[in-house]
Length: 318
Image 1 (cartoon, helix red, strand yellow):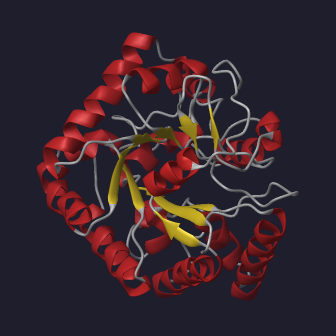
Image 2 (cartoon, rainbow, N blue to C red):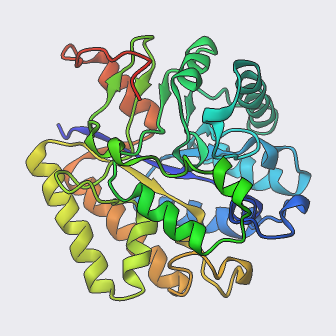
């Protein structure tokens, strides 16, 4: 039997990218969900794959988004929580603010999809011991925020240099994409002291470089061959090191600049959408050859059922 792995998609909407970028117009909550969700679902159907969608609560409160969100649940995919307002500085929130933010998203998502969320990922990989405490208090089974990569701070610097953020806004976002020390964290699932299971976003073993599809799209701008070689190298290293991947997708992997001109600042948007979708499907099928990829819940439950859980880490560990 193949080892369990997982695939997830952070359903970040157009407004959330504009907000994080500091671009005007996000306050009206512009959306591309009605365009991109059918593409994503069609692609997953072609691969015969069910995944976890991390949904932003604010999107579930807008009538024009609801049909797309319902389709995700109706297609049998897992629904998880990606916060209410997609602010990548949850580490600055108080306990009360976190309960309001996470609980507000839970309620909004459940009202549209009929699903209770048992998994969470912080926007921009934003987390803290307090965030994990609140998740445990609210009965969450797993968190999927840890991003063990050495390139997180480099990506943040690139993002800041190409953004329209003020000095104050950059200070708010200083935790975006994590810190250098995150690169030394484990790539395997583990349990925090409070019982919350952590499913790190998989990065390349040994080198700790990103292997999520958005990074592949960045490489595909230069060469599709290079992008596939990079991915195949990451898969080989995962197999050698015994790491069952947790692959992260984004809506931008299914969109190009012709679809969303406002996103021209985002890496990989100049790659034609047909090529992007083909590359996503290449990564999914390569996972299916070596692992049994499924939802994050299945991955977490498989880990929880195993008798060889690693030593529990303190909730105070970064």
